[in-house]
Amino acid sequence: MKTHPQVSINLPVRNGAAALRRRLASIAEQTFTDFRVIITDNASEDETASICLEYEDRDPRFQYYRNHKDMGLSFSLARGLYCAGGSEYVTYTSHSDFWDPRYLEKCVKALEENPTAVLSYSHCRFHQPDGTEMMVYKDDFDLTGPDAGERFLKVVGAMGMCTAFYGLMRLRTYLEDVELMIPKGSAADDNVALATLALSGPFIQIAEPLYFREIPTYRDQNYADRYKRIHAMEHSDKAPKPLGGIWPYINFIEFHLIAIRKSRLPLDQQDRLCQMTVNILMERYKKQIHEEMQMNVDQILKGRQHANPIFDEEGGPSVGQYRFLDFSKNRYLLTLLNQARPYGGDRVPGFHHARALVLVQLGYQAEALNAVEMELKRDPVYRSSLELKSQLTSAR
Image (cartoon, rainbow, N blue to C red; front, side, top):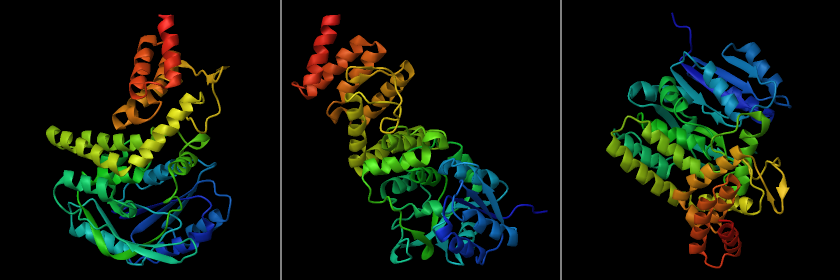
């Protein structure tokens, strides 16, 4: 006897009362009816709770859960995914978006007619928060082919607004090949998830704008503002700190490489795919990567570097202009700096000098001197490196 609905809808929300009624109504009006809605309220302070409880009271398909405090978006998504167990399909959605009544029906049909496909989604119609229509968006590339590497590279190189992440996915495939395999906390977890899922099977795109999405307000923000947004969602006491740490875009590249290495592709194909992926992402996000490196290197050079350099005000005792950190934090910084080297770190002014400062605090004098000399190769008259080299040489 069937005990679980075919589709689980994962809907996290925080203070979304303004658009929530329209969102829930568009779900309730779906022509496909074998679903449940898992609403995770992240400690909302507006009328979100009363709206959700209203729907839960009148329709048993709506299930409302409330976090006792703001736990962050990742926690809410994970909670909804946990509650989706037993369903064949799962979809994520936002409280500010809504669907055409045929959305689920078309997506389910697409997956049932294409048993090797792992995801189905439709063209998307974007709108402003006030409801003003902006544009119809569709991915102009084909992800239905049999070549996993080719699908992966198309997502990596051409995926724009990631509307596919809000499509309908086979739950078991998503859990086994994405959720349990890929670490969280990069600059764009949805991109990483889609690229990883593309390794598992084809995507079916429905040629109708059945998904209506509010345009993301952060789309045109610079790196620093986007980084603050990532921090606001994922850091502080709201949720565990993401592995993306202070290099979100570099980790974005590395998480794609993790996905490749954990795939079922032959090793030689993995090698080629890793090289092509690095080249594509380094070109696509070179501005953001350079900005994130420069920002973090500047923090070290100014003596204000911590595990979370822009936002963390805690640290060890100050000596002169430098604030000394404990051994574990300095090891963490050194790991991050070494991680950044293959992605253009050597081209950032002060990069090797920053490495030298961390190495000095760790007691690695010889390695610090080597880093200083690398900095001086880049800029022979870099004053700080000249001074540090003199100190390190005289101390030997």
